[in-house]
Image 1 (cartoon, rainbow, N blue to C red):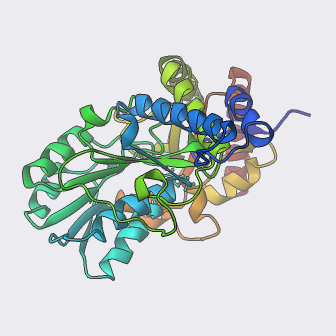
Image 2: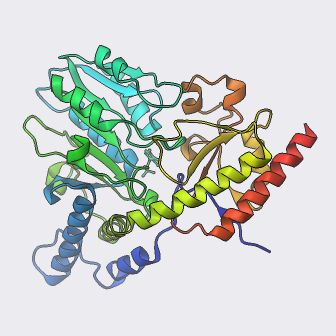
Image 3: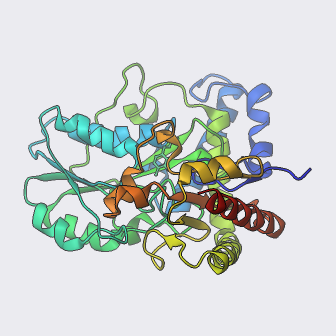
Length: 384
Ligand SMILES: *Cc1c(COP(=O)(O)O)cnc(C)c1O
């Protein structure tokens, strides 16, 4: 029997074998507390953590002291948004985001809205991209923060961050981006993008689960209130002992993603295009969701009229693992908030499935996926 094909890389990625190898000594041999200053156990762990920090910094074009290690992108987004909003001497009250953000941002912004901030979730165009005029007409001298994701986790579209950051700069608003899905799929450079805060997650870039980073630009007026109390680690922004094995893994994962970005992108592009073409050949009425140019390679958001996405996922699940939307939202029978935000009718939105390829996807697996999905779609259409 063939192995189950994994095409849900947007939900999580397997750990790269080189990442696994790099982490190994830090569990049982070099297990020291990186904050122990009196002996070599501490020094070794500290050195590994600092090497990882510079690898993460290099990966996004930042300085080492602008990287704060946290438990994942959810915490990173919370720390960025709450940390800025709750810091002292904050006079501005408006916070702007998009309706298509990950819940880590959306629900945090909503929480701030319930705690005295004036929050706005801007709509997107039918291709999933922000209409810059919407931002221009909403933002003003009272805007504290703007949070717009670099790459969407369901439809894979790339938001125009350079243009957005230029608009934010005009009024002095702080700009945060959730770049979790961009890592390893497009180049990330904090200066080119013009962002002040950026969130990353280990398990979306072939690193371990339970680790992430927040980039905090060294700039006047940038103050982050910690979410936790209890220590001065990570410049007091994120108290608690740094998880050295996980941090080492994140550093290695970023170094690999940096080094082989072009290689990964080329493969993903080719395999993704082929899979889409094969599905479209048999199902000419197949719809794609989200802008088809401004998107990351190897990520498809598609639907066939009359075929419930949930059912397709289920029928395929013995052979191919795909999903209907964000893993964090599964279990809810509602159509994806992202597809609805594109202005799709609910009966169209419920046809949506997300197929995402990754570094370890092979041509053979694409063949299998193509066969299985076409078989599943055909059988479902006969049954309907
Ligand atoms: C997965 C994901 C998150 C959450 O990351 P965790 O590290 O699992 O907390 C946030 N934003 C986006 C866009 C994601 O894809």
